[in-house]
Length: 353
Image (cartoon, rainbow, N blue to C red):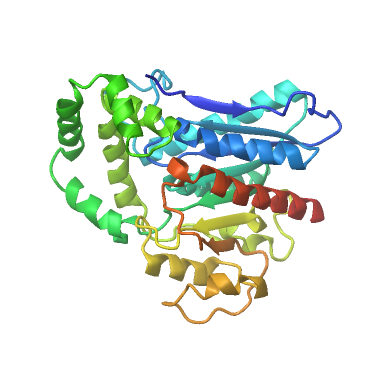
């Protein structure tokens, strides 16, 4: 079994309207960076958007560097990619995908970024790079919004899972040792048997297939833990300025694009990779709160009462359905329904500017 290196959903056949705007929704996976885990999520999102709008939606996603077989020619089989390398890699993939859509349609697509877990951190870094391009007067694609799902963007090491992972990764050569242990215990298990064992744990077909390929890969777990160590070491303080968080658009500056006022953060209610105190402080400092968000505010028990705030700030939403951090395993359709509405709202706001 092998995993796909990328997913792409083109506008539905017969619905590609040359008079309508083309939108590219580019998804950045979390760790482990295998895009196959997101197939039902992206497929459902594409179906919902295509059935509710005349616009042309292109949805694309790519595995992170080194996670899919032969998908990173510049990365040797022994080389591991940390967080800085992943940011560079994803940024390059995004520009290539924008160019592919432009060449296929003859039009420049409006771009909406989407990131899960550490993919949300990579998303913010790409926005920062994009903003630098715009402010320097250079031509760049039109980035109109971003959706961050269960984002791990500050102090991941303070989360319950982060504390446990930090203890493991303090062991010298932990990624290599853990990978060797997993390979030892699964070496004699044929892939089809391993697949069915995973299925008996009530996981969907796409999860069993992708996990089997991941476990049977030569260095899958080693790559996961190597990247995780970078996440724990590098994802600390809120490092982004107003050019990312939104204040730069308050007075009508940076009018060349509208990314700042069109960010949506979807937080888990009890996400073990995000410390609740860290999440609540970030929402209080950076998030937009209005009268319709009272249900969200009521969950912020460890922060002061939040007053209505400026609408150019990111929209912060806390889940109330107990969806787990790894939503792509069993809750793809539920999250796709939410993202469908957020995409429509981002497009509406973009038209109103």
